[in-house]
Amino acid sequence: MGGLRVGQVLGSAYFEPYDSDRNLHQSAVNNEAQLLGMLARGRLGAVIGTDCQVDYELRQPRWAARIAKAAYHPPVRTELYIGLSRRRPLPDEHRLLSQALGQLQAEGWIARAAQRYQLQTP
Image 1 (tube, rainbow, N blue to C red):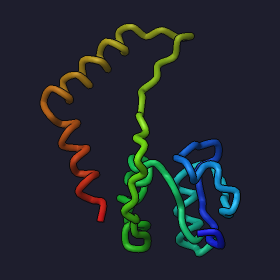
Image 2: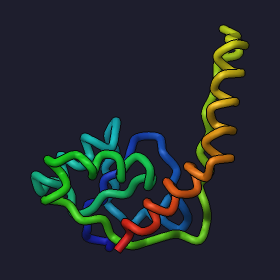
Image 3: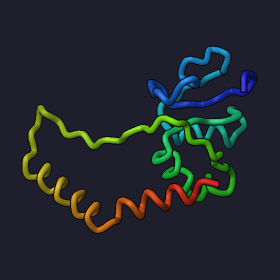
Image 4: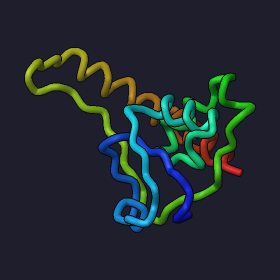
């Protein structure tokens, strides 16, 4: 992959040895939509991104027929979080969000959604 120009989101950390590989030609942009646009126009040879964000973008009709996702799962798992501001406490919203997420988990919705992502990987 040394000669391949790889696109990534600015300021993101992905996995080792990718993050520290100085032989790769890495190009950073602001978001996944920009990456996919550059890939579709041939300005990049490949892109790297987080499954949930890239999968979301790839569901858009403009990318679905033009870009294929490679099956690669690094051995390190990336945890995703929902953050709420400490500067503007919103106790009611925090409670509602926690309840909704708990209900989705209890109903098995989160597990089914995760399984759909795993099944989409070729």
